[in-house]
Length: 223
Image 1 (cartoon, rainbow, N blue to C red):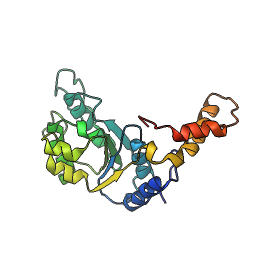
Image 2 (cartoon, helix red, strand yellow):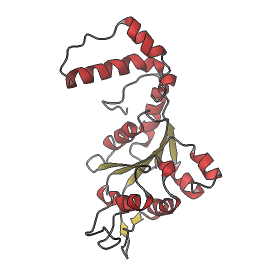
Image 3 (cartoon, rainbow, N blue to C red):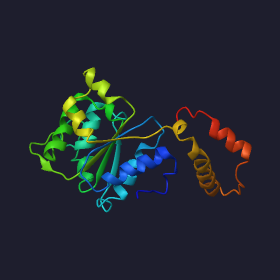
Image 4 (cartoon, rainbow, N blue to C red):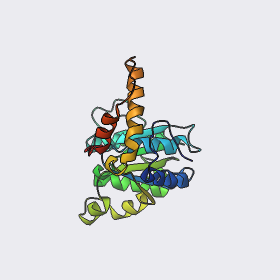
């Protein structure tokens, strides 16, 4: 069964997530992890990679919302020297760095349309072309992605490619927000208490029943 040290929870909702993950660890299927901000999408992606036969290769993560389009393209696909003004040397992209391993694309719904077309080509052909390059190269990368947007609605509104949507949605997994797995809150609270007690080198006896009750009944906006 898929478990990872940083994934805490034994609720029914999380058991369903683990059961789904067990089915996809060693497939080539593209997994799209859907969930609110703070639900642990990158933790789940990392767990899939580290339990798969790709574990000896790189797990690389990139937030698609963190960079403007031209920088994101260079970050993902690499560039050749002279491809643009500041390109004073060749640069490997994340697809090349993750060759043999896994590339996790967070905030997938924020990827610009032009880059969506390039990503679709990677998924279909397994090839990439660096910015400024004249030829393509083959890569073997498993794509995992995550979004907190409704990609089906983005497709309807013309902001996301329908053909890419179907490619990414081979195996969708929804991560439940904390308010749907409140029985996990005490275990999570103890996990973080132990972690920070160790980090700050303090002795902490634990939580009072009243404190655990307050934590469990809280709504946890932002997870």
